[in-house]
Length: 190
Image 1 (cartoon, rainbow, N blue to C red):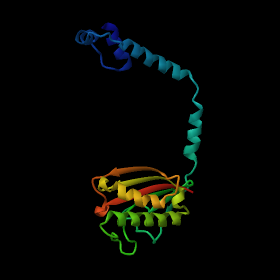
Image 2: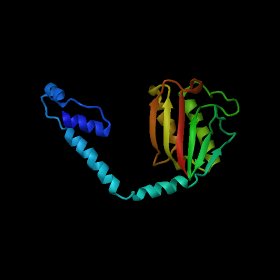
Image 3: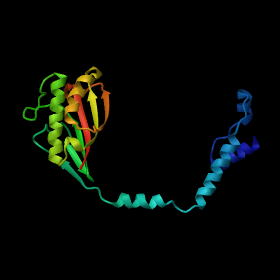
Image 4: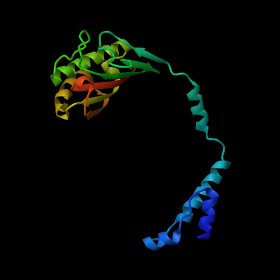
């Protein structure tokens, strides 16, 4: 107990009554090994030179990222303080797209098939404005108000993305902006 209290004072940790722990558990306690490995790793790491990757990450952090907003009137305007898409270092990040008609700002209909079709048309216009296509999409995320619409969405989605289809995640969410039935976002390579 004296060693435990002395060690805990030297490292700033609270004292542990090892006898009380041992009496409760009937299993050996290996606290000393843990303390020894912490001390050994501290001594070992303090004597080693800085790793090579630290200089690489420092260089990467100082290089500038070229970031450009993508905007087209052929797709619905952003509903808040965000861009329709951002081009950055040969990638395009398309914000979540809804099934809104660009000219009216209203949903094409309440029907999941028609909203999905409109979402993908809108996404196509944003991709086109960025210099990308459906074929250059590498990842999509689909958010559905009702996961029961999954099969219907897949049938329409498959018409837009050639093989190999992009990686994809699909989620049912509690709610979508403006009570939409579907929202899709994507990442494309330029």
